[in-house]
Length: 213
Image 1 (cartoon, rainbow, N blue to C red):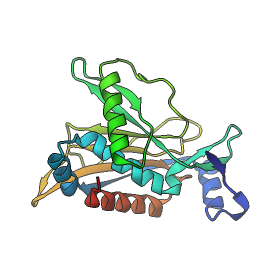
Image 2 (tube, rainbow, N blue to C red; image 1 turned 60 degrees about the horizontal axis):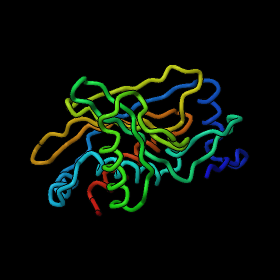
Image 3 (cartoon, helix red, strand yellow; image 1 turned 120 degrees about the horizontal axis):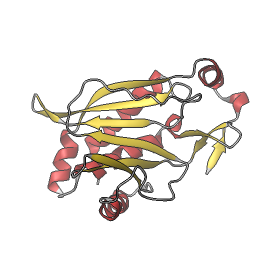
Image 4 (cartoon, helix red, strand yellow; image 1 turned 90 degrees about the horizontal axis):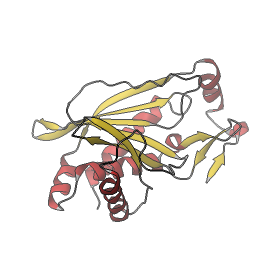
């Protein structure tokens, strides 16, 4: 369900209007995540890292109101009750990728089974969009597994930036006995300020550390 914001009582009303009308911009923040606990749990349970991490990211997105923003048909801002991940799959034969999506479920096992089933069903289909019916309430997440990077920026050239977050992560590698992985959040400033994005990354780190599944 999409819920319109009560603009009169919204604490970020002026900030939203400023970045939505006058300074239409997005920003990116890159930070290293410690995925030691997650990698260990994935190996112990013979799971795939990619869908396990997408689940963790989706949990963090759905716990953060600012990362569930959108607009209605008239352009009025609001919040979705739930956001579903739209992720990329890579084709080894021709080095192209496709977008795929899976409905989010709070249950790790239910989500993991759904995402791995979607990857198996659509994994060899080519094209930008390979699964029909993508819902409006989605966020983007993709991986750059070939590179452990220190900075990354995504920009959408449009008159009005999308309010949903774009998440990117790279190859993890060992540093001082811990597995570190670069993680980038790109989001419209109208949707979230630096505080909200910093808290989102910190909350995601906690979810990864707990790795409860």
